[in-house]
Length: 308
Image (cartoon, rainbow, N blue to C red; front, side):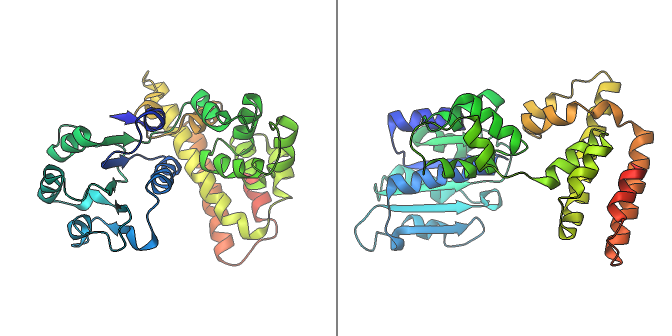
């Protein structure tokens, strides 16, 4: 098994393999692998095939001769629904169509590496697990091409709430600048996110700061913010309960269920979210959600903050 970073280093060294199995919860890394492979294979529009795992045509697509003589890329998503992998063994053993590259994509966190089809793929290609990166690894990934300083990359991760997908998207802006972006450039190019600020400030019980962020919010964002609060409070309560039971909540990160960035943020206020406070906050969320559904907006969020 290779992690995303191991695959990235190996790909630069070893180049294309015939078959890949990519899984994991960090979808931005999964999509980056698919983009990299498509650029490397460089198939024509006719020779790029994207299918779902339950499609009967998966194996036919792998055994289809190229229509225009170029290399062929077949991407199969949702492969956890595939039950018959026998055609894959035949395809790998026959060595037919050497210009065809197959990529199987699963939404699962990980798969059993002892499964026959995974063993076959690892023998002839790569099995890559895209788990959330550690902070230093994310900084290294963003700053690896020299377009942004390491300190600036770390600042950008903080500004986007440790959302790696948003950070990688923001990196595209730096391609228009010469030289290396520093923290001042990052601050100018990464826009503020009042909804994220509101959630973080309220969860941290800094109500005055939360109200300041609320003034920058649009009413259309209120429901999304309530959903964000619900998710963060659920995680905070889980961490709180694990600590109370003398369990290590960092296992949530190590098993890939929670990104290190989100965990580090929530950990700072998790101790405040015992059962009693959570029940009170859930009542506040229920009140606000119900009021918004009935068409109210003025004063609803302010009342929720007061009840928090």
